[in-house]
Length: 123
Image (tube, rainbow, N blue to C red):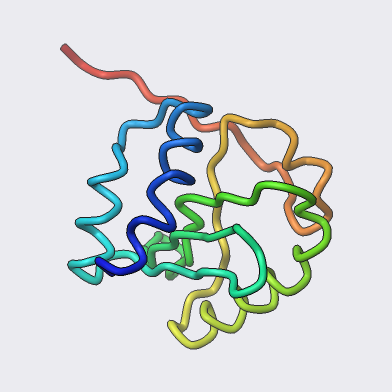
């Protein structure tokens, strides 16, 4: 992981700046080093995906936690989804899941918008 960090850290910083999530890039590094997250890294493009295998009431899912895909995502989307589905089957996950503040994913035929997730902190 240490050798790949310089390659993915700028992408994590770009995703963080755009979406302002609760994590920081160092959290991702820690999860990847601890084995609680999996990194899928493209050989021929500058994209990567960080996923987690998570339990759900319906079974388990492969959560697409971070997707950094600069450029024309459509060019490699089919390859990405086949790899995600292969990994999900290997982990015995019954679904892929993704949460995103960006509504643009509705244009991707691989995803169906079912709900929006809101949270509220109790002080």
